[in-house]
Image (cartoon, rainbow, N blue to C red; front, side):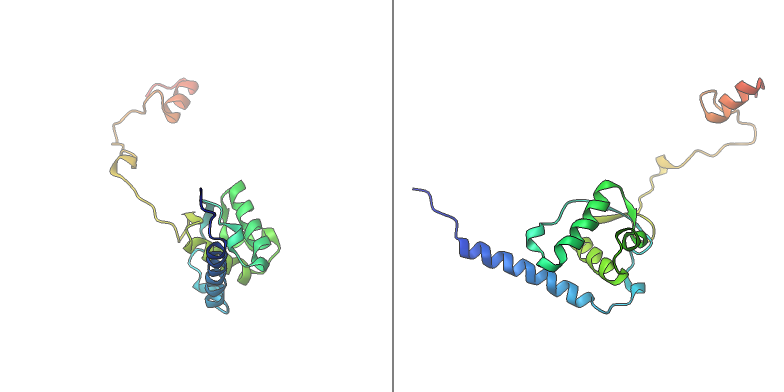
Length: 147
């Protein structure tokens, strides 16, 4: 005989996760906008949060933010303008989503970039000729000039 899941423990877990969200948002309440380091970053959605784990009053706003970021990466400063919500509310929700690793910065101040030596463009010397397959080489060919 299979055991039924313990409904009370799942309910308690859900209630605890809702309280964690509420506590995280309460910590951010009244925080100046300058404190949010992602304000000028390009953000993208990594994964949707469990909407059932959020306090009921925040579900619509979080769903709208995630839907916007799922469609295309967006600058954090444009999210409140696009969705018609206050910057304080939007940035607090974004910060909690960022802490839960549901969203990440892909460009701007809050992003981390790794540059490899192979990714850098090779330096050209004064006597180097452009490759025929490069854009400059093709332009030279089209103009009828041989480098």
